[in-house]
Length: 154
Image 1 (cartoon, one colour):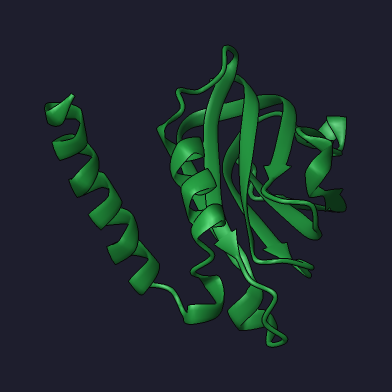
Image 2: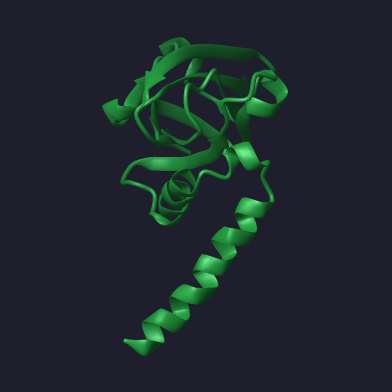
């Protein structure tokens, strides 16, 4: 039991240090803990990748936006994209896909965080040969965090 507590101390210290990396309005301890849990969880069956980040309620869009990008080693064909966010607020999200032929596609949607995993509507004709993607969250009504899981095949 004592050994488990000793292991928990570095993890707690790490979260506190991580909280210090963000402006005060983003250091919501519950959102940080949720994000840490999401990042530690293995990818669900059929998932090819995931992205996650914090999001703030700041009025300046550059401060409030929580975005993350990914470049795939091999082109991906997406089956679906799921979004989940922390808390009971709402947020908007935009996914940008870069295809291997150089085309780009974007889809935006609003999310209710207490609704669990939600499907982000990506045009079926734009789901093949995805080389890179970015998810940008904005317009959050609460200090929150989000995770996007991409399902498909490489």
